[in-house]
Amino acid sequence: MTHHIDALVAEIGSTTTLVNAFDGLHGDNPRFIGQGSAATSVAEGDVRLGLQAAIDVLKASLGADDIQYTDLFATSSAAGGLKMSVHGLVYDMTVRAAQAAALGAGAVVRQVTAGHMRDSDLDALKRLHPNLILLAGGTDYGERETALHNARAIAALGLRDIPVLYAGNVQNQQEVKGIMEAAGLEVVLCENVYPRLDDLNIEPARRHIQTLFEKHIVKAPGMRHVYDMVTQPLMPTPGAVMEMTRLMHEPYGSLAVIDIGGATTDVHSACEESEEIARIQTRPEPLYLRTVEGDLGLFINAAHLVSALGAEKLDRELGIDTAALMADWQPIPRTPQQEKLAERLALEAGLTALRRHAGSIRSVFLPGGRQQIAEGKDLTQLACLVATGGALTRLPGRQHIMEQLRDMNTQRKWLYPKPGEARLLTDHHYIMASLGVLSRKHPEAALALMRQSFDAKD
Image 1: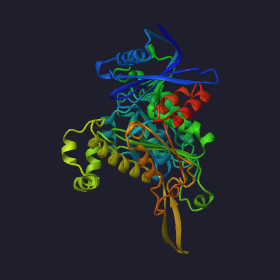
Image 2: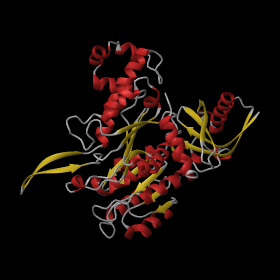
Image 3: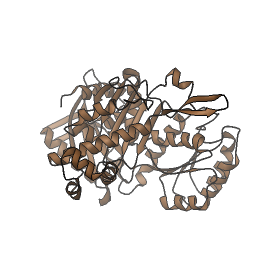
Image 4: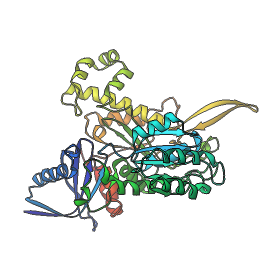
């Protein structure tokens, strides 16, 4: 029997490749019809092996001899994801704006510098060998020399296979272009991420970053033949989650999405600031913001979380032997005690990530007396807190974790809703990233499928 469907969406991860199947995308009743998974085969030199293995698992689950599909979409975090470096002028201005653009596109930002790059910065950049370099600096018609100094320094490194995106002072565009092209580097010119004081303009850079990712992902180890199977452009997996977050903003209102993974914890938000907070805000914040916490994960960084909480404290609180459990810690918990510890670590990762994502109010002493200022992202208007990712969609205690994350602002320390105010939603089918890339061609179907995932029973 041959199964005919509209689309498959592959999520090619560092260790696992998932394939989600969707049908009815052109009508009023789109359906999520199944999922297959297999080990990612980047290490074998060809990602297609793992992709085909995941499709074979999907066939078996559907009882089909063959699957025919119109489109195969894909997101990828394999081969280290989209590794980027970001270089700007002042950390709180152009650097933060450039970093927000990179993270919003789904990048893993591995190096950030402010001001003139030093020899040590350049040595670190050469060792990192990122997939993409983002160069910014200076408001339009403002400071010029820092970006030009950094352009010359980067060009002299001989990194000829790395594209450079320039998103700084518009006056420097042609000079930067000439410097990079003379060195044999591909350069793309973009609108300034910080064209005027207190004016963020990160959307053009975000779009350019995703386009460059699509163009250059085929150079990553094991990814060379990926377009032999995939019929649509690839997206970085976190970028696909942000795409869905943006699409959900209008129908669901201000929202934040939290994904606690094995190595990192990501928070994506689409939230307008309140008028009250806007009046005392010290710097502009993007409407759509992604933060990624590289020290908060339930497998690779589990030991860090245990250390932060204290093994003895965990033993008393949970009635477990933390050291014994950590000696044989697995990516997916296999026993009730492992689940209990994973849930406690997930709670700590979620609380820490949300506190870092949300801003706060503090008092400062100025010549006119004591005043309150707001710093960071204002989430006080948050209407929905959304759970996606393995931990928050699969752990037995996930609902209790989400309730505690929603209610964390009991002491009103953060620019975050009062306890009980935000609505909780769970991506039960674990398809949010897949729907993000699917939404490029089928936005209405993607929203309908997202609602189905929220409404699904455990």
